[in-house]
Length: 97
Picture 1 (tube, rainbow, N blue to C red):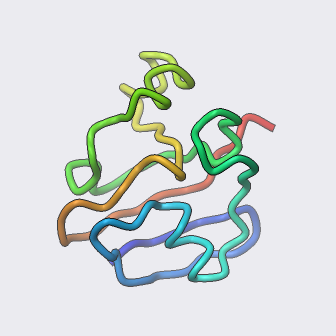
Picture 2: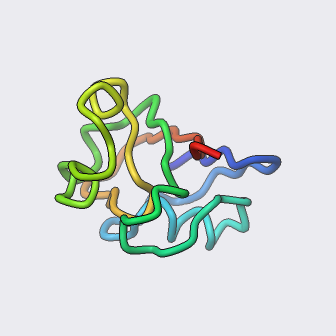
């Protein structure tokens, strides 16, 4: 299960293996900020508060777009963070602007 908190909407959905956080948010009709879907704009930046171990390791795009402190705090890019295992994930969309 994944709890998705957007700007004004929230939803609980099945955390489907291989799907990105952004894909799951869009499928659940959560108002998730995004623009490029490639990891370059960082509009889909989000804070994972639970279940980080259920996501893939940060991608090169995330390592380039987020600083070490953000990564340590649990920030990811929704278009890059993919579900790799079953469990509970909680995430909030936290764009820079």
